[in-house]
Amino acid sequence: MKHSRRNFLTLAGASSLLAIADDQGFVGIISLATGKVVEEHQISSTGINAVIFMDDQTILAADAAGMVYQGKLTSSN
Image (cartoon, rainbow, N blue to C red; front, side, top):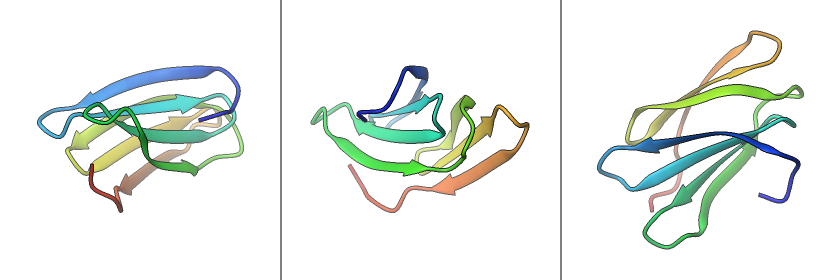
């Protein structure tokens, strides 16, 4: 991710994934095994305040406007 400040990090259990969110509304998923970005999406036009893994393939994110987003990973690590 080459955006502004990264705000939040969270780990998925057995899948060795890291979720990163920033203040421009981007969420990135990084493989801890390879160190590479697996997925990256802008899900909001405002900053992301929180991002967590619900399970190894599903994230839940909340933005600065109070909207909540749920998404499934489309790639595997």
